Image (tube, rainbow, N blue to C red; front, side, top):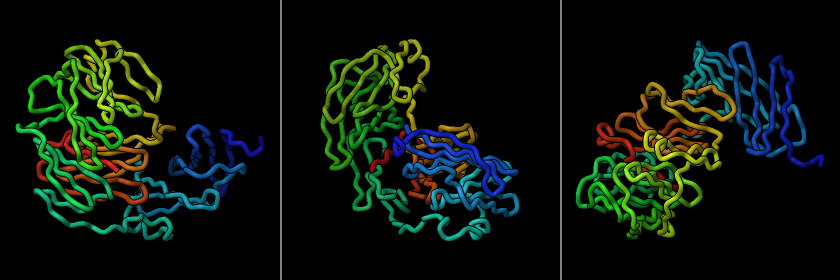
Length: 350
């Protein structure tokens, strides 16, 4: 019983700072909030559980002009700094070189990567982060990978807004865009070997449809024209029609057809530690435990390509970037078409 993990919350003072230390056994993370005269700093710390308490030590504030950063150790290991620029909470990656020079070496960003510096079909590639990247070229994809690049032709006519491309795990599904307005034939691509299979359904899915999200191995699509929701399992080439619902943090919530028809931006809500949002063309990171937003890019951002707990891929101008808190912002590639058309054109897989 003594060694069993348990959630707890503890307030104490260390080095003159007010500290709130918590452990959430469901998410298996520590939560630390430190209040100073300059602001409130909140941290999510992924460390193995300890039966010890009061784990925060060696708190330091560093100031450079209007920048203030807080560092500390947790269970004798270093935690990435949290920073303010003026009154705004910002990623440590956005602080000045002068501020970074004040940090010890173990706080420096891990940006040691070898640029690719290649060009393929007017895509100027800087770095691919060891991912498989598919760039929609209006009738198929340009495939970008560390080992090879390839053009994948799928359709005869140009499709400028491919709104019904969905993916889960290592499979991507899309309508047969050789048809217009309504689809009974689909293509399923295995992104590991780039093979495609045809997939046919009895009921048509109209152009007036949108992707709700994914759960387990399934992709869910709602058809506003015919008032029906599809669950598609790409790797099995199977589907079924289900009562209209969404998943809200793993909980099934039934919705009316009227609701899903009117609210076409409805999507599943996932239970993640972090979320990323664009507000006034700026990219912010939120965590699930408090409402504070953290600016993570100084660029004007117009679209989020993909987001996970640890990373977010986004588009600024004609360029795709990656943000990782340990590495900062890294330019992946530039593609002039993104200046004009950028929604649902990029798909990224491990």
